Amino acid sequence: MSKLIFENNDEEIELEVGASIAEVCEEQGVPFACTEGVCGTCVIEVVEGEDNLTDPTQEEEDFLGPGVTDERLACQCRIKDGTVKVRF
Image 1: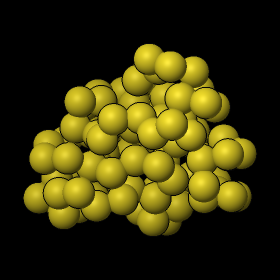
Image 2: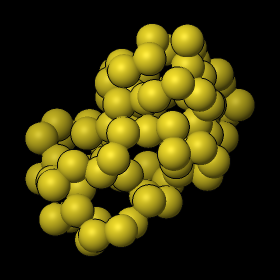
Image 3: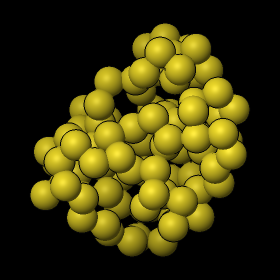
Image 4: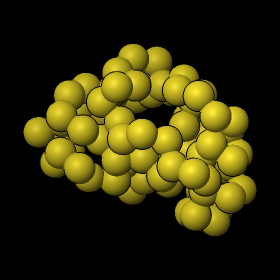
């Protein structure tokens, strides 16, 4: 199991390794619109554990720029084995 921590409210959610973080982010209040990585509505800041998220998708690189790891699009991320702390 992996853990996603929301710094905004100290909520900790356990997720299966490889799970998308989109649904739990939306439940915690992250706004969503297109869910395809185009609009950027679901940008989150990765406070800790960026290595425990999958590599940025092409959509994220197109929107956020190549090499950006402290911001991600929640609709594009999957969690790997470990803990990730985010804020929005």
